[in-house]
Image 1 (cartoon, one colour):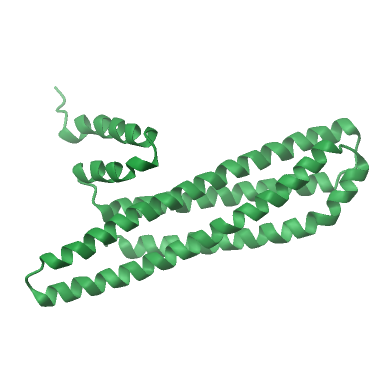
Image 2 (cartoon, one colour):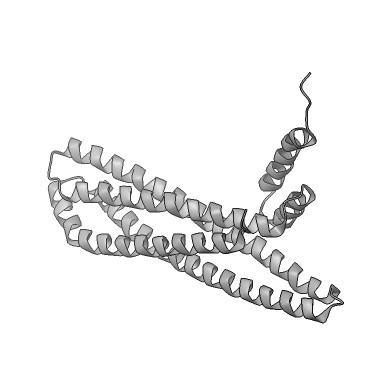
Length: 227
């Protein structure tokens, strides 16, 4: 008879508890962190996990923004019949909607990184007072300051990339609406005037995202102890 380990038994319970916390809203983020700690997942591990999630969401958003740009450029390079333009519009609108969704995931996951990071460093700071060995306390405080500085750098870079998503989405949305209301060759000619500007803005956003992704990878490497 196969032996069932405690981890196997507890995994469904942990999943259910975390799902309940997630559904109850952002106000229960602290409860979610505490639940994970109760199952042996330290705040440092949780922070690394959240950074990985944020990095992955930025990778996905980067690919989706590239896809939306391709759809937009294909529309501006086409001067077909109304039916063909409508089909192109629907593809562009779908690509835009997916971009909005990916951007929202990025924002949510960056906020999650900030929540766990704040809890980790507050706890670390408070626990410095528990040392009775001043030498060890000083070393721990220096590690805290170094880690906090690296974390602050990561968040700054992530939020810089996040901040560039909204203006790009707004510009793209304006073009999608214009095309929706004017499915004709004249409208396409009007779009061509702003195509290069949107392309440049989106290319800059992609560069910001790649910088943020690279920063996240460095942070993960530094916060993950060697195996």
